[in-house]
Image (cartoon, rainbow, N blue to C red; front, top):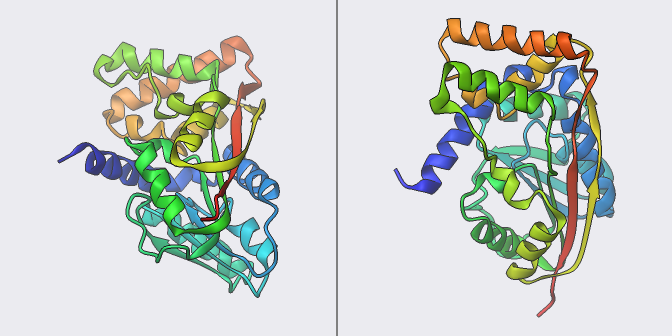
Length: 274
């Protein structure tokens, strides 16, 4: 299995598992930053939008609301369990201009220039070769169309993040991760360089500091279970998982932690006309 296929399989497995906690109230950041991405994009009625790595529709749903019945939005993701949740939301909100499909960011099944806007929120960094992925996103974007990339900023979920990984290292040092895939573009200059390398213009990047409430140890565990941490948790035995959860709860209680850092970088760009 090559690096790309391994990354694809890992992402699908992790987020299919995380679907049961993905929309937990403790994970409201998905919806907050998804909508924040769309607000910055300033979509117009009638536009065609592609949302890759769409999850349960945090950005696709507000995009569909903004482009209206005359527009259309397609959301794609590798995790079918997340897509099922997204389809239910779209149906409940009667968004007939929105559809969700299984799809891969590196091999988009759309013709060149198919969309007025392309969105990728918290997804581009899972691809080992982000440059190639951005070239593919650029391909399906029309000339003069808009791209929106949102990624995590530095110190995501600190200080609880460090507590989680230290606990994992105590039981399974082989699973300890000192580097996250989003670390490659968690700073504005790094993401700006990547977009410029692919040839996008009119780059606008904003680093936004934020936080996520943690009202109880169960909130922090819900964040773990409904995010990328789930891939690590799934590799633990039931006994070890229980110990990791217990030690994380003790950390929250001992420190009186009420929130964690939740910083992001928003980027928008234009595909230059020929």
